[in-house]
Length: 164
Image 1 (cartoon, one colour):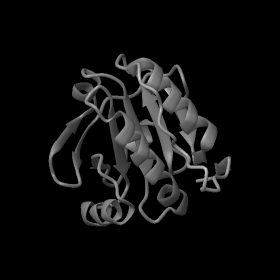
Image 2 (cartoon, helix red, strand yellow):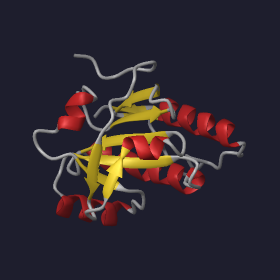
Image 3 (spheres, helix red, strand yellow):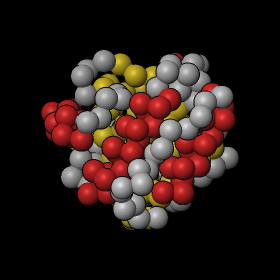
């Protein structure tokens, strides 16, 4: 089963955050597009990728877009992960048997999706893909009429790709 691809419709879901509040994909999409990042806290590529997603959140987290992580770990480990890696966007808990992850047909973590307000997957990306993150940033900047801030700093040595 291949992972959802651009053009597919994102399955709807309702999950709890690591802080025990409720999250609904449909409610979030009513306000605009959403980035959903599926992760496992022990995954080295997730640990590498999520701080860049946090940079996107700081650039565009104006209420016009939403960014959420979907963790395949328990709430306690997920909260510790957020604190360790400086993640301020909501992290949702997809408990075993990982119904939401299965609905999105995940093969690897991290996997991220840029989902439009009509539930169409605009961009799907597995692992850390510099090109995909740059494309998501450009798409959001264009949609919001904003100038993108540097996502990757000149002092950072960023690989083009790291598998999940």
